[in-house]
Image (cartoon, rainbow, N blue to C red):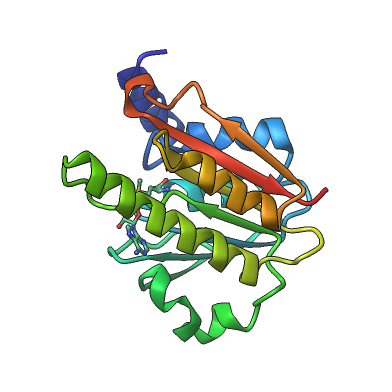
Length: 189
Ligand SMILES: C[S@@+](CC[C@H](N)C(=O)[O-])C[C@H]1O[C@@H](n2cnc3c(N)ncnc32)[C@H](O)[C@@H]1O
């Protein structure tokens, strides 16, 4: 399906972004949502993923952060904060080590200078992995993280392999081929 058609489908289905179909494909294939209660959504605005999770799972309790504002999503606890400041959010901190799932669609503003963008993406992804490792349940937690195909990807995957037994790469059908974006999934069971 063409990218525009995913956008039309999102509108028809009542979702805020077509990004939900990328998450949906990974969720369907991994069944990661089945038992996940405490879920942390990093880089959540405008709220497509958070809304999707609340629709698909009755048991989910979603905590979301973004540096941008986000229109409220029913049942989602939103905080306008950077991932760098996550430890300042008392409510989220109170669940440290107890999250079942961390999802991250965080992306930096692109400069167009390839080396700079690659470095910025790596730094944010690296911080996302270490944040997820601290906030997830060590035994059963899983994460889904957006990243990009570049020369730092192998290193990033290796880093995830230090925290997760299973690491898989996904390129969902709804993700534009030319975008270079891909998703890393990490799980411990
Ligand atoms: C592609 S959008 C997320 C879309 C979202 N998953 C959805 O379905 O609606 C990426 C988001 O990452 C956020 N972001 C970028 N840097 C961030 C940071 N340091 N901390 C938190 N959020 C950040 C951006 O503000 C942007 O809203």
